[in-house]
Amino acid sequence: MVEQHARISASVYTSHVPAIGAALDLGKSTEPYWQPVFQGYEASKQWMKDNQPDVIFLVYNDHATAFSLELIPTFAIGCAAEFQPADEGWGPRPVPVVQGHPELAAHIAQSVIQQDFDLTIVNKMDVDHGLTVPLSLLCGQPEAWPCPVIPFAVNVVQYPAPSGRRCLELGKAIRKAIESFDRPLNVQIWGTGGMSHQLQGARAGLINREFDNAFLDRLIADPEAQASVPHIDYVREAGSEGIELVMWLIARGAMADLAGGNAPEAIHRFYHVPASNTAVGHLILENR
Ligand code: DHB
Ligand code: FE
Image (cartoon, rainbow, N blue to C red; front, side, top):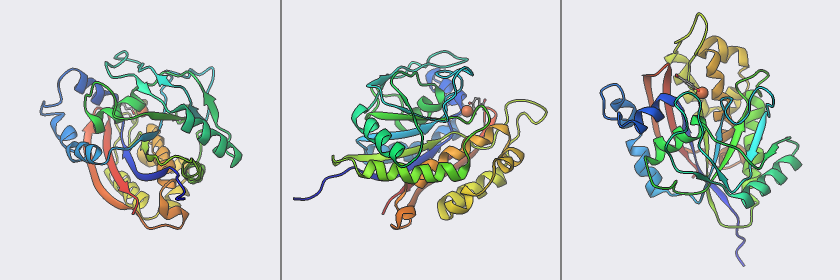
């Protein structure tokens, strides 16, 4: 009998700028300011349709929406059957409720915790722009999201945030967990947030094209080296909110090459400045 198990087919990386969600929801996506941003995702939207996963494991950060400063899990896995959209600022976005995958999420929690990463299990959680904007960018404005999503929230808002190294290693553990699930599911892992931006203080509005493009290069070709970059370098070069980029290393760590497989193929790469206060970056890597 052929052994059946889930596998990770691809990783998707994208910024989550909240104003992108507002532009889409308010029908402004064809305006001159926004058109180039959405244009950069057209090929990816088609790719999503052609490569429909069964589940998306979506690494993102909450912005004091589900978790206030009273309770700050470093890594939180959403195990619920569904997650309501909620948001700060513009209010909840008019997007579909996110359906979860409790069985796969519980399996991943079991496996990853047994691999010595202490996840927080969350059975009720609202999801903000950190999760819904990436879904909108890749899926458009459907009646329902195309598949179940497992939200995986990372603390990059309140120091101490996890290191790039910890994130990459966690991605490797998530890969093992997903690939030991005994159903033939096609799973995509998404790493979201970033790229360079700073929302407060004297350097508010900081954007660093050079840093962002070097990050993309190294994320693709040498993620182990990128994982050694300390937080202070992100903050100095990419601004205080540029630290969101460590989440991309979780998705990258789950790709086959870091477990002895082939290098991934870069299907699509996009970079645009500016969108609101930040650079928009986007990448799709397929396992071969
Ligand atoms: C902006 C970017 C973010 O990542 C965020 O969480 C909030 C605001 C911005 O560019 O305005
Ligand atoms: Fe953010």
